Length: 374
Image 1: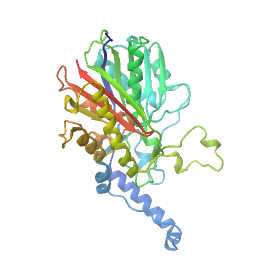
Image 2: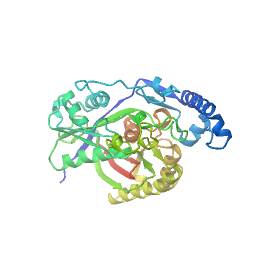
Image 3: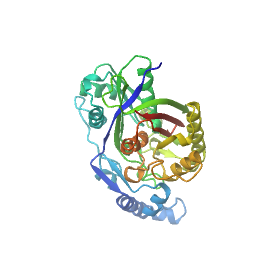
Image 4: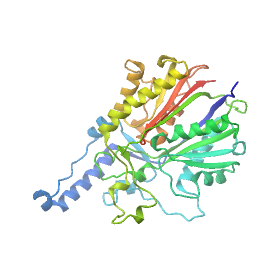
């Protein structure tokens, strides 16, 4: 009989700064005014197009987002800067991702009733890693006094489920007994806040989970019943930022290629059926049907996408508790979205009830984890 592996604790670190749609739109429209004024003659000659204004109604209809949390507010809202102001640190100071991760991990460990010394692995899995090396996970490992090893994984918005699945497999193989998986998402660093179609999408945050053998768990939590991962290459969501940028011929610091960009309509059209098929296939492989799953904790990218996915899976209009939405408050938090939904909306589960955590994003990448309340 295979060993029981559980999610015994989760944690969440929320940055101190919140930006409303109104604040973001005011900043963006001030930039539009300045740009159109500076380029008035070229616009009148038809050489370039005038920039369009944004609005709160446009943002809310397109995404369902109302607010987002960020590591720095002033730099983002400054129409002359429009990017976070993050102080440079010395090499002997903890990185920003390490600071965020440690706070989320402490909360997750408290929930699991574990100490750092009872953990034997750290996995950092998120959309963007702050530096090439040494690993952020290794830095966190040292900061918390954890034995074993640290590993960084990047799988865009599916990084959480991919990281958690790697932890599950490491424990199932006998390599580890307890692993913390953490997702320090500083998404504001990859956003082009001068792009009307995407400047409102993302928010910063950090989520964490403790995954361990059932025999060592002090908090019963949720048993992992099964995991399923899928990738399929697509350029429809892309970020070209990387360590070779400085060497690219003719490149410059403000190149839009180095920010998040997407073809939203193609993503919507292609990803929705892929996620539906993936989830139903995963459930079926475990001898289950969609009605056996009490709750779906989905990636939080777009309210319209989430509502359509859950409707297709259930074959009916979903109730709020069927697939909780948290992006109205937190925005798209890349890999953290599905785990935030799980963290905030699982306390009402009774023993034996099933749920499914699912992420999807660039790659394309899709990951799902079926869990049962112990």
